[in-house]
Image 1 (cartoon, rainbow, N blue to C red):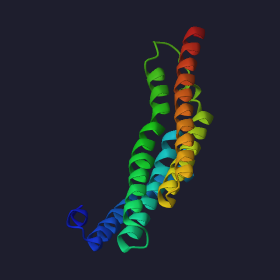
Image 2: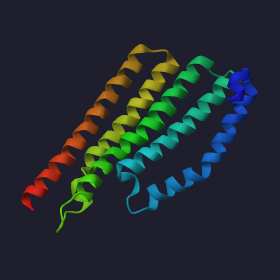
Image 3: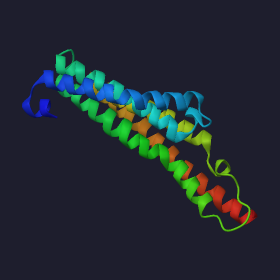
Image 4: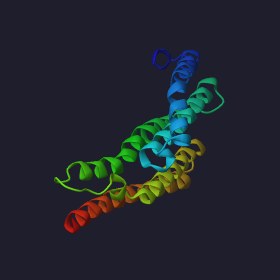
Amino acid sequence: VAGLAAERDGLVAGGVVVLAVALVPFARLVVRVAATGRLGAREGPVAHVALGLAFLAEAAALALAGATGALDGRRAASACVLLVGLGWAAGVVVGHLGKLVSLSGWGSWPPGPRPSQAALYPRRLWQAEAASFAVGVQLAVAGVLLATTGVLRAGGIVLAGAALLALTGVAETLRRVASARAAG
């Protein structure tokens, strides 16, 4: 932040490196959980956190490229905002939505037998959402870096599709909860 405020590219680059190094232990944990954990990357939240870490690494590389003059600084900064704000922050929130809705349905179950939370969670829909989201973010970033409106627009369309998949995932969870309650 001091580098940005003082307009000193060397300080910006140093700050990016420090932040990237600080994220390494967390990234290792996420990679281990995604690769060997019981849930793995097939669950929306883990997939989005893993994708988000990849977006953060990409943002760090672009920030360094912008600070060193290898890329246009304005384009690099705009792409970083997309990667951090949309790819990481919004992605992690959306990625947790399906699990939170299924957990809410499961946790608010009346006394007596209840289905497993996994039965309420449409995993394949959320896998498709995560994949679509990743493609949409990458297309949007490419559009910004290449100053190509068509590629940026394509990213927006794919992201809108990912949002529709997320809404469909929530609706499917609510349907499953209602159906299971009516049957039980």
